[in-house]
Image 1 (cartoon, rainbow, N blue to C red):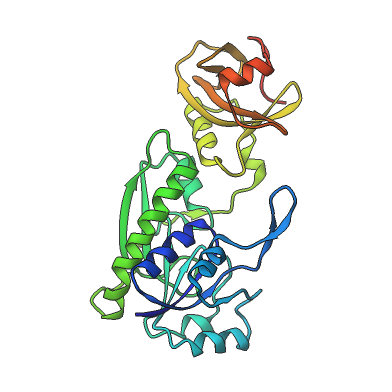
Image 2: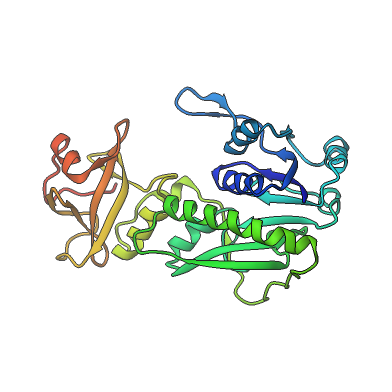
Length: 309
């Protein structure tokens, strides 16, 4: 089956690799232009571009799809479908209507729940017990198109967004390989999304990563997990930002929210509005991620000190 592919980050690269290794004929790969990255802010290719170069695939990096040149290039591929995964550009009608089998999106949620930009983080923040992959036919609305298939995976109590992302990327890759031939043959028909149960996964802002210790320890722990690896949940300690990468909600003794109740090699216990968060991995500004035991060797907060402003 001849296809075109549009995607940018590692989530999309997993799907592209599975498609190539499953012998789909990838005629063209669309990905975002190279962006500054890393401490040196050097122009860096996306994960999808790096993989496409490895496989020797044709690549295009348009700033927009709203021009006839890129539409003509896509038309010239004679692809049956455009597979889309976390691409980052809006597909206009001139592209959506271009392919006989349509534009097929790999979305990291169980639609219609968590339409939008950050479904993985939003599912963790909301305390969802499961999520999954939806393979859907794209239309003009934001993730509103009919769904060909879904596959679920549990959200484990210690899942970070990073761990869940990797699991969903692998699941999405398997799903698209399974679904595409059936879609092309007309065997798999898309079903309209239910009207009920729609939620929106709005883009994550850095301000959301600031920990509010007044909240329940379960909520604070979800915040830590949802923002690991990006942007990283944080709080102030001695007026310096500290990122908190991993913790465990426990039933510790009462204290003022943000108060350090105890410190030990197994973790730093911090009082929340309800319950306690035992911090087990954290990082000072400019430093590296450390276990609580290693962190305490360099900075020794005492019980009674507080996280927060």
